[in-house]
Image (cartoon, rainbow, N blue to C red):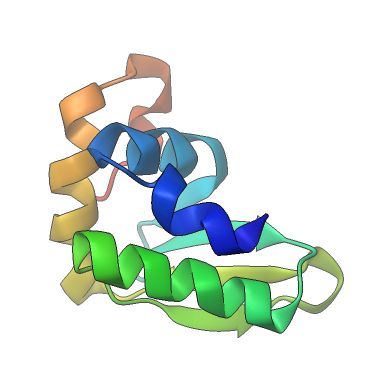
Length: 99
């Protein structure tokens, strides 16, 4: 249930796991994405608000049409993501960590 997301994102490890699963760093454009899948726009807004409130990471909602919604994080937010995700390093997933 999306409305419970604030409670589920209790600590950094929750975001790290989510990012390792559904996140991606795009080196060419130096931006990151967190794919949300086929959810409603309101559910995407809840995810956007929860991440901004808990971690201070500001993302924009993208409608990827057939793929559903994603959160887009510009280069200016990558260091915040990296500082959280790299605490829980998973070597085979290192490509997902913003440089």
